Length: 337
Image (cartoon, rainbow, N blue to C red):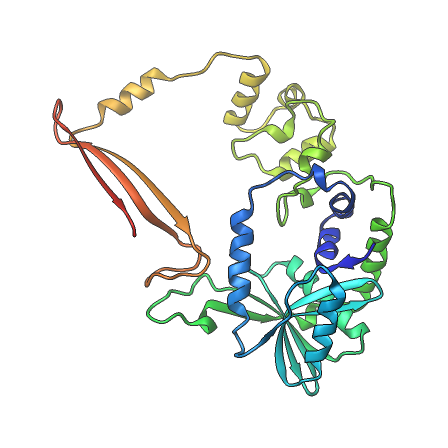
């Protein structure tokens, strides 16, 4: 089985995650990341015009066609090639933006995030290694991400919208080669790796196989606790063998709300309703009374003046209100066109 840059970064996070994605993908949980992928595609498409005119290598299930197209355009330098594709010894990658100059190339990896993460450097490092192995002179490598300080005023400014960060000095090609060897052993093995839970289950992203990896734990368990208990604290309990709700409570538990949650689930207690606090709150209300419901969205690329990337923007509301006690119920609404 071959390695790609997406598989490489999965393996960097967790070798078991890589193996499961290759051999037990049906066990992956749908984490509802459709909007994340949509934003990634929108930002990636926009970034292609960062340096002017470009040639796009269209995706093809037959990677050879992508490789052949790339080779054709590589000879027509200087130019910009998007999704330029390369393969070396079973290691495949497509470069988001490749600046193809007479004296070498520059790699630009585009992310829809608003910060530079270590996993992005790993991504670029893999691409740099592949191109170096093919005898190409990679002059510099970059990560391109979204500037969340950018405010659209008038015409959209693509150069202010993106942050271009050079990561050349963060790349260790010897380490990349060592990792590639290790990860190829993983994906060419029929045995599921015996790897325990770790912070990588939640960082830098939630793992879609977390339910699979915890399927044999008693239910409910320490990982089912809410109420602002950090995942690292849950891991500490887990590593000590404190897993069930009873075990957690017997060992002091966490905060008051988390402990209350465990007791209610563990002992099937009746719902807790603090009527006195509800009555106190209601007694403080004065007319007119307003009941507001609204809907909002986040856009990775701002289209409205005065807004930033990923800013929460209200586009619809429904307002019911009473002007006085016993009065008529009024209603106003708005839907942006």
